[in-house]
Image (spheres, helix red, strand yellow):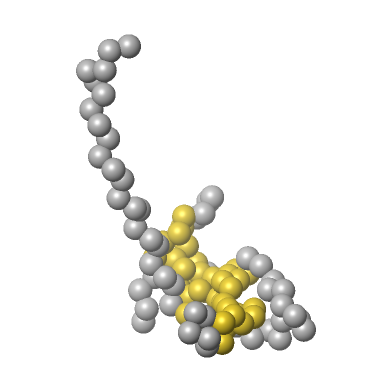
Length: 94
């Protein structure tokens, strides 16, 4: 079973168990290959009453959305980028 992470909402804690995404178009990469373009449209969350589907957007694509979506393990939240050390400015005269 994939590892899930906690996401805090305004009143409850819910664990995202799946990310929902769909194909919304195509693009050509630098090697000339045609690739699918994906958009995250929502999540499956685990609540005290069971799993629920939360759609954040309805995808718009040429010809209309066919209703199919992928359920993938959630991506880990990105670690904060390291910050430059802050210079000690306690001795700067003002």
